[in-house]
Length: 491
Image (cartoon, rainbow, N blue to C red; front, side, top):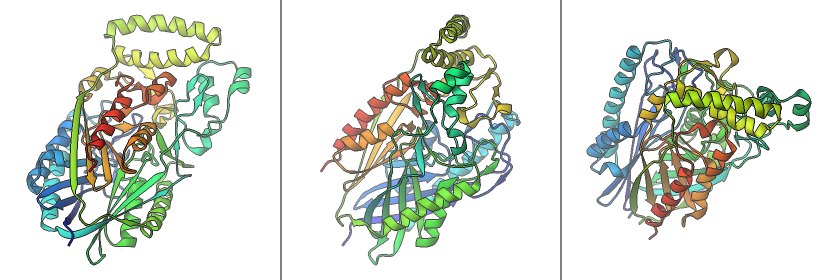
């Protein structure tokens, strides 16, 4: 007789039309409609007297304080400590913003009202699905499977001798991406032709698509959990319709095929994005369909977990360290100084230094509150939208989470390793490599959101993601701490 019980529930969490959208600084308009509903889902797991829960949300992320509020609500209604609750966001870039956008066409006051109303509704729905899942517990068994997926995702950081290319975008732009970056640095045309290579992605990815199937003792499906590493950015800043992006199509297609509830968790995808020829719902559907096909094949070759597996949850928190940020007056002085160095570096054709100084100047100008033009490769910002208003850099600093919580939930030797941010894929791969279990699902944007978590090497290479306020080395600290946490789960 199985000692595991599973309860499942879900509700739409689609925000009202007119709410600001998250994901792209170049998008200043509020949402104008709904393409597909967003969902909040709960997978409740019980073993004898112990309960744990995984909640998935179709949103970009939530800060630690709001996450903890939801974990307390859910924990109270399923009868378990909040530390046994894991909340993971899909990281769609076509969902609601959870804080006002100062460059939005809507006033801050109006944005706050819409966001706060939606958050109150979200809390209410989380309470409801927690109660429903508790009432729907059935004895269950669990199966595990995985497949390798290539050709759908890539590492967007093309490394050149000068450092990282800003962002490698859609396939039609890859050939000239490095050339365009060199041009923006003032590199002479003849040197561009000599040095520029096609921006074909060649960095590491995590190709694993991992699947858990929960079913009744009569083999009827209860739920399916999918874990895959790829930014949901198939839809760009011009899209003003609420959508779950490709994970929404993946989930819908598998749910239709298997007649059960599907949960999607985002892997270590801080520097991983999908191959697409254009930013459109057609491309989101194409990627979702391909992943659904691979998922369905994986479901045909699953391994059963032992019927007497236990549930274990361990947590660890530590204080984050940050880069030193100069005061605005000091930033102004440094801008003048570095602009002179930049002019000299261009003249002497020291373009590695040009790259470094250019990126330092972006940060300094944001600190000084200047209007700046972002490199067009950043966040898919189009030329007509690249001019940025006065930047609220110190607002970002105030909102930056100061604590990192890591969590590991074990079902036998299957481990969900939760990280509260956009972990670089190299770091996720390292956690998997060093863990005693070879069935580790890295779950990111979970229980908080500390932003991009690059490798220490990436900070040396520069590039968009390394504008993170986190001090270099935090990523490696997270790896060490997570491996130690997972070691505690070894039976």
